[in-house]
Image 1 (cartoon, one colour):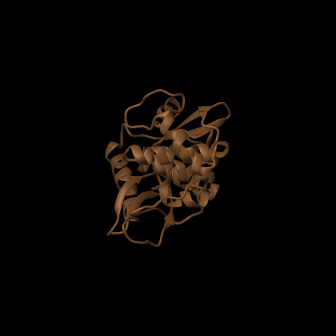
Image 2 (tube, rainbow, N blue to C red):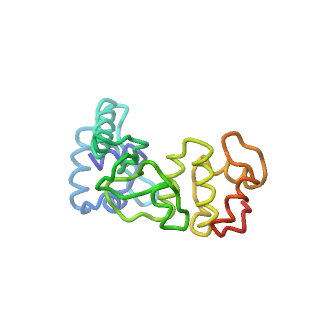
Image 3 (cartoon, rainbow, N blue to C red):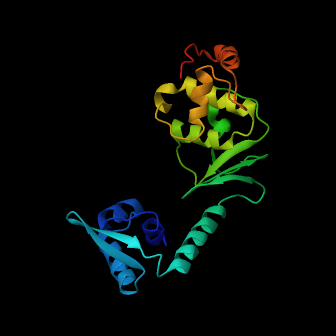
Length: 207
């Protein structure tokens, strides 16, 4: 399932598949040969390397099944008394009113990086793992529902600018526009940002 899901995203070489999945090259080759014999996977030459692709034209139902099964496996990670915020390829982001056996992230992890907030619920991710500032920031952007939470995102970005300058997310365009002084609906103004930045020791609010 792991191999088929990755082949469904884009063509990949045997070596890349082995590296991404942690499966030995010999085992990956064995499965690929079996898939090819059934017409599930096709092979093409690019330069000196073979690339393998999911043959979704012949096997569209199988591709849909693999996608649905992987989504189900990820969603099973969410505790019953929690609310799913977003599912990713191999992880989930959710919130809960009570503490969970999971990794704190999003706004719930901001205090570790200089932004202390009074929160009603907790934001978590599973599987449990060590998160980078970038992952925590992306989780908070995906969690932000209103003006106040978007202001927190901007403050976290400014407080950890060096680590987050390469962050890629659809909201970054609006955040940078707000920092330039543009009025963006649902986002804090530059004056609001300046006022809230001072207590956190943030002096540079340039985009």
